Length: 168
Image (cartoon, rainbow, N blue to C red; front, side, top):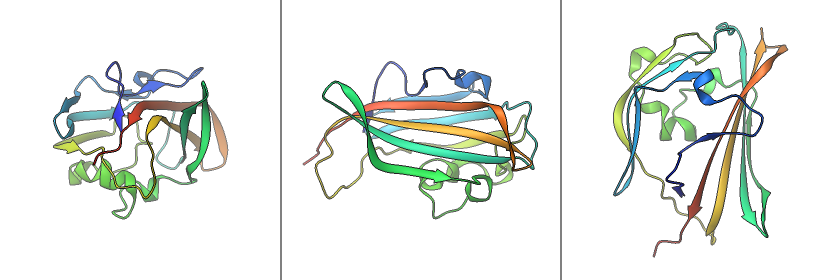
């Protein structure tokens, strides 16, 4: 997938900007020949959250067809993300969280939790058994639950839009 050049991620319609939840001034992403070079730090700024709060993550993948975004079968729901955030068998760990320095590996439901990243290149190529060419959108929604039960009135939502090409 090749994300749009203008912005790698953007907020979903009706959602607060990512800067309300994460301080990203020291987070660097730049396009390089074989992917996206990533380095710097990310600071969590969910002020209302406590380490006991449950983080619900919902990821949906859409394909642009016939002038509109169509939901695909590619959906993932993680009801309690924190225990799985740094699990080595998960795709988000392999893509991103394995590059967080060891001492910073705590859930992002802590205010001012800082993730120092070891510099890495995010490889956006993957093998698929079918033709996946076209325009795609990945939407990520994070909802917090006070003590695991009562839903907070705010949520984080961002999406990445880009094009998929077949590489021979």
